[in-house]
Image (cartoon, rainbow, N blue to C red; front, top):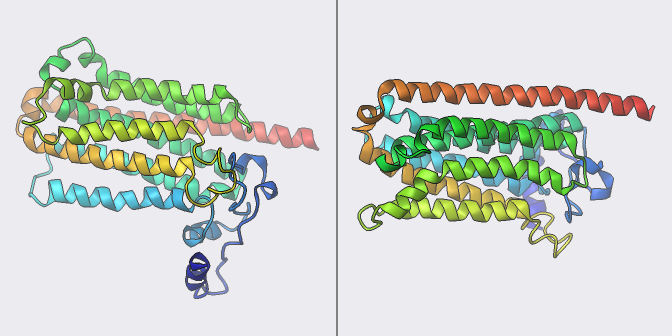
Length: 343
């Protein structure tokens, strides 16, 4: 009842010339592409005006929590950034470039996710394009995290190991492959999705994650937690991320309660919350490491390597967008061919 009252308070003042979202409908009333397993209601009708989906930000539907969870983490990250970096008066120089790119990467994955969940119900074309861009955000975030871990978290012994020299190139490659793998899986497999789709999604992302987190794990096992008290933030980051991966992979709890988690309590919503919290703890830990090592970063790594790593970040971003656009082109041709055969 309170949700209905809130919707009326928001939508009643909207001028009649502006479109307002239609009431939600059942899973059986939308194309199979838009249906989620065990989610039986709360779907938005397709092919409404784009503004309807924008205004649905304040509507009760089965994507509302997915949108707001990631949207609200943006100001949280910005406030924590300001508290840890802005307020102490640190200057913007070469030493802070990896941290800035990390923050921008976090915003990228959060906002691309918000856009995908908010607007994907418009049409099949919008659904595919927006989720392809969501995968771009994930790839960029992987590399942004790696920049912070490499320049602020890693220990000299780890950098001298066989992994150290291959770390950033490896993350860039796995990030690009994770974007490509997710785009291909989305293009290739239709609902109901087979297990092969999860394989294409999880294998490159898992390889990227375990490589990305390797300097953090090394640090946790080789440095005293009593001397560096913020290391528990890294431990929380890892624990929350692994837990979020569990909910991403499994439809728990809705598989046990079909129709009961249509609006709140879906596995993907829990995944969003856990991933956002993991990112917050990651930022806290990286900010502490940056404050401790900022005066020696340029001396240890060299300004050239810092700038080159940033250029690679931009290259990964553009190449990931390229693979998303190429996959979208093939997807459009596939949809056109399907329509011709149906005629």
